Length: 121
Image 1 (cartoon, rainbow, N blue to C red):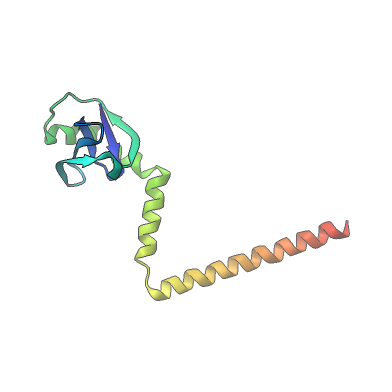
Image 2: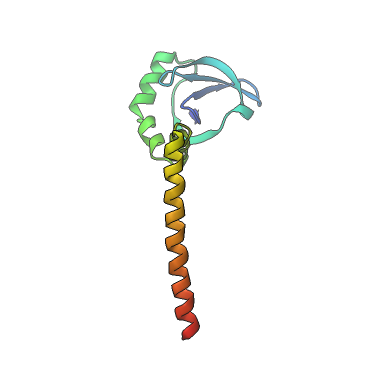
């Protein structure tokens, strides 16, 4: 059984209760030992035999369409949004700031109207 950590790496062998052997043929992560504290596990898993080569793990990974499933998760979407925000220019950040101000102003005005209508009733 293979579990997946956050960045599409496979845990295919648990070395100790603190460490696992990981491999990420599709993400470019070479086979290495990694601490569980440094990983965030996901719900995806593939059944493979013990001691599989990287090439065979990659085939199983592609066959299970893990990238597609990962892209649909909320965590992946949140990470993509975060990366997009990091790459904004100063002017783009300013435009986002102004759009938020405008949205909040509209919400505040509508809430004021609703409160006023509720008060008169």
